[in-house]
Image (cartoon, helix red, strand yellow):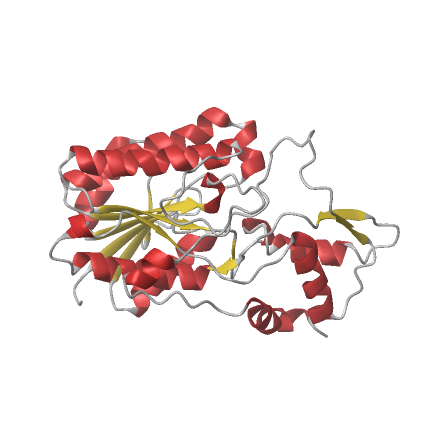
Length: 317
C-alpha cells in the first residue's frame, strides 16, 4: 500500500509519536497535529476545537487515514475541568468525525478500557459488552465513541469510522508524567529519600500496553479496512491490550528489582477504591482482543519486564 497519507492528532503526545513512527516505518506520508508543541512542519498547529482549522488541515494533507489520539486522558484532570474535557473528548471528536466522513477519510478513534465498570469477575470484556464508565474520563471517551459511529452512519459511511479501545499505556516518554506507568519509575526514586512513606494501589489490575505496539495495530487496522470491499461487514469497535497484568504496587516492585533499589518506603494499599477519592477507578477492565484476532491482525505485545530492563539501562550506574 504505497502512496498513502495518514494524519495523526495529538502527534506530540506519548501515543501519537509512536503512531506517527508506525506509519512512517510502513512508508506512508505522515503529518501530525499538535498545539503547544507543534513545529508547523511535520506537526501542524491545529486547535481541534476549531472546525475551520481542522477542515483546512484535512484539505491540505488529504489523508486516507486519520488516527485521533488527542484527548484529555488523565482522569483527575478531567474531573477538574469537565467542560474543557467534554470540548476535546466529545465535541472536537464529533466535528472531526463529521469532517472526515464527508471526505471519505477512514478514522480510528482511540478510546479506553475505562468505558467499562471493571467489577470483580466481569473481565475480560468483549468489544460488544455493555459499557458503564465509573468516572467522567470514561464517560467522555464513551460519548466520543458514540459520536464517531453516529457521524459516519449519518453520512452513510458506516464502517469507515472505527473505535480502538486500549488500556493504560507506557513507552518512550519525554516526561515521566506522560504515562501513569512511566511516572511510577519516579515514585521508586522518590522512595529512596530518607523519611519518605508512599501508599501505592495494590488492588486495581492494570494491563500496561506499549505505545509502539498500539502504533503497529493502528497501521494494520488501516491497511485491513482500506483494502476491504465491504466495510459494513467489518466491526466498528475494536480492542487491543497486553496480557501482562500488574497492580501499581507490583509495577513499583518490578522497577525496584530492575534498578536494584529497595521499595520499603512504598506501602501496598489493598483497600480498593477510597470512597472519598475524587475519581473512582475500576478494579479490572481487561479488554478481549478477539475481534482483532478474527480479522487476522497481530495482537502480540512486547514483554513488559523485558522492555523496561532495556529502557532503564540508562539509569544504572
